[in-house]
Image (cartoon, rainbow, N blue to C red; front, top):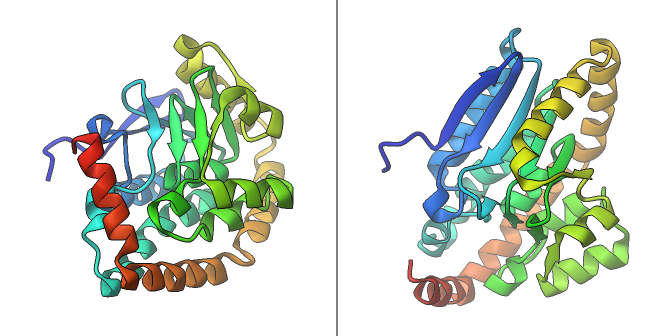
Length: 255
C-alpha cells in the first residue's frame, strides 16, 4: 500500500478540494481510494466550514480512469459483490452530500470515473477532457453506467456508448451536456472552485431541497442497478473473460 494518501484534501475559503491521488495509475479507483473518498465526502457533509466540494485528479492525464484493473483482474466471483459495494458507495455518497459537488475533469473520466462525474452536481472540463463507458471492452456488462447515463442522455446515445465503449472527446461531451462548461486547462481548478462557490452561494434551503429531489431521482432505481450490475459481473467473471481481457490490457500497458 502506498504511503501517500489516496485522496488529498485542501480547503479554499469554504470549498474543499479532493484530489484523487494515484497519478501513476491514472487515479483509478482502488479499494483504498474508494474508502478514502467516501470518508472525506462524509466528513465534508458534516463540516459546517465546508460549503462545497471540488473533485479533481492528480497529474494531467486523467480525472479517474475507472476501477483499478490490477484489483479487478484478481477478483474471484465471490469477491465481486463486496468489491462493487465499495465502488458504488462512492457514487451514492456524492449524491448524499447536501452541498454542491463539482467534478473538474482534468483528463479522461472512464468507467467508474465517468460515473463519479455523472453523479456530481456540475462537470467542468477543458479541451483534453474525455469521457467513456468502456466496461463492455473489458468483458463486463455496462449496467451501472447505463443506469446513470439515462439521467443525462437519450436512450439511443446511451445504447451506443454502452454497446461500443467508445471515447467521447471534449467537444462532444459539451454538446451532449455531459460537460456543463469548458475552460482553458490552466484555469480548470480555479474555475471549478469559483463555480462551486457560486452554487454554494445560492439559498441553502433552496439548493438542498433541489438537490434532494435530484437525489431521489438518482436513487430510485440505484439498488436495483447495483444488484443487476453485481449479477452481470458475477456471470461474466464465471466465464473468465473479464480476467483475460484485463490481463491482456495490463500486459499491453506495461502495468
